[in-house]
Length: 595
Image (cartoon, rainbow, N blue to C red; front, top):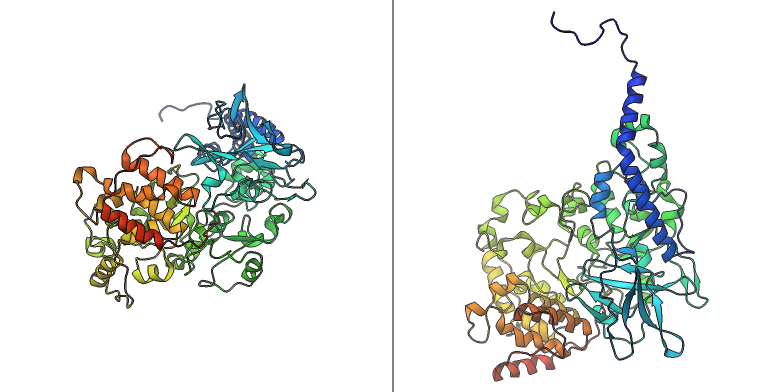
């Protein structure tokens, strides 16, 4: 018979006792995580109270991110590592990235210094006097960081200087925005920033009365910003038996689960912040909840505004009455988005959207292994973004691209998602899938992918290539004789100049380009562009100057330098004449992009 373990006459264990045993094991396993979660929750709550003592609340349907950690440790850690989590933080030694060394930042006496675990800045006070104020909150931890101090009313206003992480330097806030520099501008977090830089952020500030009525649940973009209010979910799964029966909570409809929701609904979650949106009910997220519409659906509390080229929307009339430049500051004239952070508008205008399975999570993820810089999934880098659907080699091989297989010109995104969006002092990829078109460039002024890479080529060169390769019609109008990117760099509007300045520091473009007006030593690639980019150091837009400085630092191989200290390379007499001609043609129209 063989060996028998145990007493064969012993009665079988009842199922309820097995379930109880399993529940105890699960509870013991989660105990450590629970303790850590409570510790994190306590420190986070203290930070919230310090930042917004009269405006932080925990509405009854919310729990805060700390409640998610004990049961979802892996998801919590992947989010906690992201820049979404650190978008807005209570000021602390772990959060503050700026150089608070007390050095003067300008002739007005502004400075930033540290005392123990506290961070302080000199702010303009009554009658223009400078007075010290404690920093209570930070915004940003990826490209730049903004610092906020609390007014007596409870409103948070920014220190006039931001800290650029790439340069390790302080710069005026106004020099980070694409508009002519202004003096004395005050940024109030409670008005607009709170909507996207916190969980359940409800704006509310009346400058006339000094009344603050804004509120948040969590600082940063935390769990309930995407999954919806979690109180019912947490209460339900406090029971070990519930966790045993419904492992992972996937059957709980009180929160949003990407595996259950459609691609369209999941993308709307991202669209809450990553879209051009008119908020028609600021308090809907807190007041209405998922009984009105799918949890976290943007249709419940805001309306995505599309350009008339894509959709005729009555809301536009109201917005244009309030701001006649509303469309110009956000879109190219054909409706393609030209400012950062509005990727959802590009998604819904793309042909890829015809596939109901296509959405933001086709390429991005908050929890799967991904690149922290842009949350791009590890298995969706390079051409994998596109070949996950377009798996026919005839559609993406060299016969289609007319470039060497491993070259930047054969990468799908470089042609179909070029860097025509501006924000955060750099160019970013458009999320409206498109193809290069010289006619679209002529109609809108938007750089096309070919000239964005081949900095030394004219529009006529591009038109001829697209005609020979793909049968595109040749434009009927006369084309400018100058290299297109140099024309945009010097004679374009402020947005074009900023995009062009960034592209002159983009490695694939430098590798593909040569001096269009002379010879270039192959060992000194890009040196020919230095005097052209340096021509922007006196640009009327401080942000354009800043982008040019970053590019000059890359071209010269040195550290970032100030506008006053950068020594430009000499320019040939004939190039100086070209520069003067292009400068005389510069588009002087104001282009204040709504970043």
